[in-house]
Length: 330
Ligand code: FA5
Image (cartoon, protein in one colour):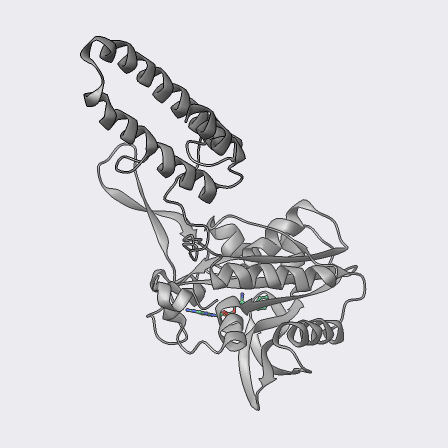
């Protein structure tokens, strides 16, 4: 029996046949070893001790041969493999996060403008009045500086436990970055700046107190309104797809002259996306440029409005509600 069982374990060449051999010899009910054990009772008591020892020897030998066969076939007992793991079951989808639609839009806009040679520039969200107003030709008494239209910061004073209204504010437009770039560089300049801006507007389908703008600035020797129109048209065609027409409506901004509102013709409707114009000479003077030598254009477009058009989003508040059922669609 011993020799026969050793040969059988050796011959097993897969997990199923090994299991069959195990049941045949080591099976708890009908295994051959069990049979031998049952016969122990009929052995003469004087021989029983020796026979018992012999049986135990056989048992441990056959057990170790079984384990060796298991190892050889790579089955059971292998480190790190869960025997209850079923590779044929469908997997559990890991809960991966993804990029917010506005961040995706910002990246996309940067890529399109980058192809036209505009490099990205940044500025702080907490600004001083010089960059948000004064250098942009918005003097002290201008209505755009009204506390009702801006988030001025209340800063704690060192000598008092009361907060005082400080001079600093959350920037209300990315035009601040135009000033920061021109203060630090000489023309030619071709930059865009994409970032958050803040205004105490009541939220509705198209307004939110925090939103994003894409600012563009191009300064060189002979920049014209025609250059502005072409850049915006190529941009819109790239971002919205198809040939998008552009319309300029006369407008007013203190930092551009002439100034325009920019509309795109999209799906049969004229839609306003932002403001633009030729950089006002007063702005060039504020940053130390000679307005006789350089000219430039600037524009500021609402990023949420662009994103909403492209993806058919009808309410800006959906973008910031944090509702995953909405966000997972992008
Ligand atoms: C400006 O902010 C100017 N700085 C744009 C500019 C830049 C003009 C450079 C000339 C030269 P305006 O306030 O119109 O302009 O805002 C621009 C765009 O921001 C709007 O057309 C709109 O698309 C978007 N916008 C304004 N307020 C909100 C708001 N509360 N929520 C969402 N988008 C807004």
